[in-house]
Length: 215
Image: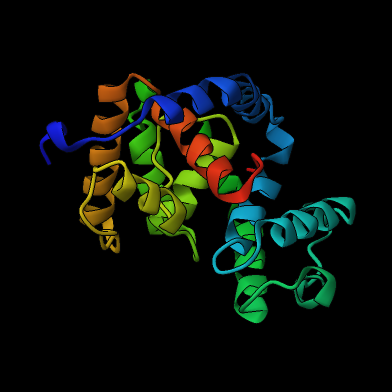
């Protein structure tokens, strides 16, 4: 889409400037997540689809407290607890168990650098292809939560704001690699045009939606 149709008002920019310190501090938090917590960040992202972020957060905390990675108990009871209910809890509990079994392989993939052939986009593609329950959005989300920068996390909130900003005429279909990557490129182009890094913009849209900067 030609950028003459982009819209980002002075008011939006002013609001962004007000929140920027908080947004940058959040991105620094992600970059400081210790490696031993990466597995639990993956658990969080596997729990989030169609469930509340706060619930997934609570589940992640409990899994960590009970040393799920070390002990390997069946997590279904935690996921179906009404206090932090996760939709499709049976399927997701099995995905968590699979991810635990596969973690050594996942961790070594994350450790590979561009010199050994895997850049950030390739790591994201690997996660989608190899980890059960990882969509393009969740793989981007996971990598962002452990400190990777500038991978678009496209969900209905972000896409809605991109429509309001004139990037898309309607909320695009982002199912499948080609569509997701194309929409991500449009987001990146817009971010470059208005001079705000894409991951800062993503958290800005999120805060407009949720009123707070979660993860």
